[in-house]
Amino acid sequence: MKEPAKTIRSRIIATGAYAPSKKLTNFDIEKIVDTSDEWIVERTGIKERRTCGTHEAASDLAFEASKIALKNAGLKAKDIDMIIVASVSTDMPFPSTACILQDRLEIKNTPAFDLNAACSGFIYSLSIADSFIRTLTYKRILIVGAEALTKFLDWEDRTTCVLFGDGAGAAILEATDEDRGVLSTKLYADGSLGDFITLEGGGSRNPASKDTLKKKQHFIKMKGNETFKVAVRALENLVIDTLKENNIKPSQLSILIPHQANLRIIQATASRLGLSMDKVMLNLERYGNTSAASIPIALDEAVRTGRVRAGDIVLLEAFGAGLTWASALIKW
Ligand code: ACO
Image 1 (cartoon, rainbow, N blue to C red):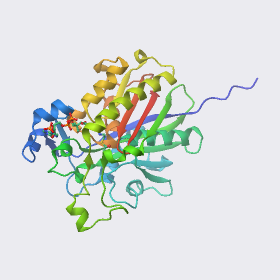
Image 2: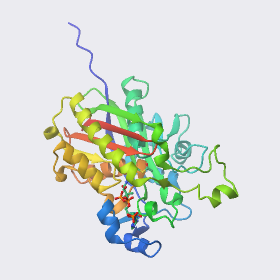
Image 3: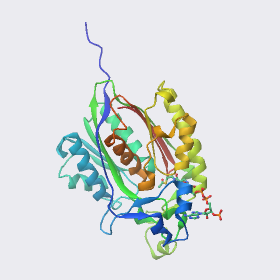
Image 4: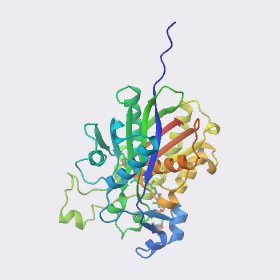
């Protein structure tokens, strides 16, 4: 009798993360703008963040994180079939940071491209990589979230400059026929709310000029409070729907690894799931919001510290500019 065909899934076989060594604490920022450690901790949960040096860019962080992921996987760069870099603070509009990374890894011919879904970028990349693997197009894909967002901050705008940090996280996905891996991904966007979080200058709408500089259009602007409200609602629905569609009860979840933007948003999501905070991975107090890098940095820390183990049910979720939001459910 013919054996039933085995289901091919993608599985994260290794992770890696890297953040620049330079730390900027809330107390350091108190000296730059009218803010306080107390306000930042109470409203966001952030205590410090890492910042790139003058000559450091997103691809440098991506390269370091990727090298660690490759080492943890016991692989060489030539074993990778595709590279996706999620970032909204790429080295430059082109060539892509993924192509720059490919060159730094000293490999050629593998497809490589950047993906812009802001803070949801890592999960969007995971979803694309998962599809390529499940359709047997590629066997092994490197996905990286890499951000140098502090280069795009207006240090006179206290409503944004206290929030963001720099860093990168990488993951390598591989095909498996074992009963584990990525169970589902869900991706969403609502472009009608695009003006909530923007970086308006430097593109074809507002090419760099004296005027764009004067209007500070090369910096991140955010309607924080409006974004907060939409994020809480969208994420609460997203995590409930994700579990329901996979017939998983919140009590079966081993760990929630959320995008690290704001502790209050994370607490609201956990509370909607009835999940105690000790089942939630948190490191935003040390890194701030690193956009597309936040989930892979947190995931890497969870793996390294033994908080994620074989067989665990892991839920990733993110919300960001676009607006975009996304989830991934993984059996580790
Ligand atoms: N220090 C001191 N006071 C401040 C600061 C600061 N750094 N920033 C704002 N304030 C003041 C405001 O001026 C306001 O004062 P007012 O009441 O006198 O007008 C007061 O604090 C409250 O401001 P809110 O904006 O209402 O504060 P809120 O509680 O909403 O917190 C925050 C702001 C932290 C930005 C929150 O709204 C948030 O986290 N939003 C979501 C961010 C997010 O998830 N973004 C998506 C990802 S980002 C990306 O995709 C790139």
